[in-house]
Image (cartoon, rainbow, N blue to C red):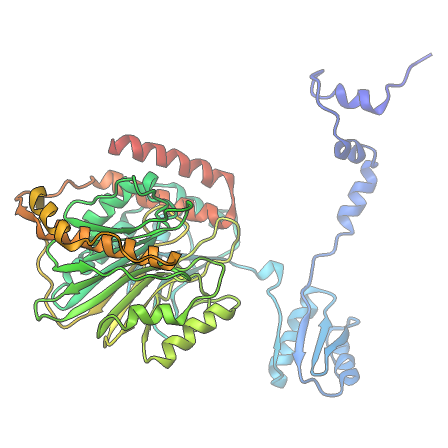
Length: 533
């Protein structure tokens, strides 16, 4: 008598006797007869997208005409009082209906058929005026067959953005383009454009103030990258949000003076400002509860003063216009940049809320200027909806430009602001500061009065801000700067190209959550750390 193995034992005996863990799905699939599987594959009908027609007239007659045209039964239903959704039974019927709708001049919308779909990618990081033919030639050199390439335009200003749409045929080779862009080292054509942008960024100094804003999301583990970024781009002012630093942590940058606003009660957020030593300035602490800020005043060679503020508004709570007034009433000219955590149709996509309306109304009612990049600045880790949260607000400035930079490692891109101030900024110098601490002691002894009147927590914050301002001013007055000749240490192109590639791969992972991008990003991060150290 022959024994029949139970199904579970049959599963365990697969793969030349090697044991496998029983799997319910595999077991269920194994019970379906082979001829039934083939039948189900043959009966699978390709999906045909519906067509929505606006303001149709005489719907029964229209459906009858389309059925006669396609020689198929075409059904439809009204989805609102003025929209008809029709369901073509086949792809060929879909094409015939589309041609007839175009011929009759009806308004409609639908989706591409599966067999007509193209592979579309967007290349970013290039100059808006980059030659499209160069991109096409480079793709052709890599054996791709692009059908179309053109820059994307801003929907409000109708100006070219640093985004280029590339359309390729839906063939296996075209799918390799993402791997080529994000995994290979073929970045020379991107790097040359980046170098050109950097040169332009550093050459527009005669009448412009260059401010870079960045939400670091914790600057300590990223400080080495940030340091070399500052040496390469050489901005006049750097505004940082979410430093996540404690008061005892050091934050110094060569040739820059640092100002910080640290939390004393609990961790998180915090703001900072770096300003070049060659620019005359002094700190102007401003108390605020609805947002965090670090603020300074710049003294130009023509004796004009400009207030510059780094702002971080937490996602929760209501922003206070009275506290905004403290910043914008502090000087005749003001610049406030930072992460406002606000999405408004004036500068970003997304659902608006009360705070976004407050900020937008404040800008409009006070005759201020909004300076926001056309590109997105925030690429969240937990979603696929990039937005623009980082922008600037200017008072009494005629013009400026904002650009989102694909640099540094964070869920926020740095944003560069070129602001026309109609004054020459002193040239960049490499200096070494030495402080006369006895002079510092004498200045602070006279300036800081004992036993201040304190009646509330607000009084405590104001006293702390005043003492901080006195200490920083005393350091500036009791310090001397010595100019040091010699070039800055620069990272070799091999490392800077690797950093650029790592940033591109990491942002790709934030959008797709593909573990390959995550692994490659981590590998490159470790290599960069080893190369720098």
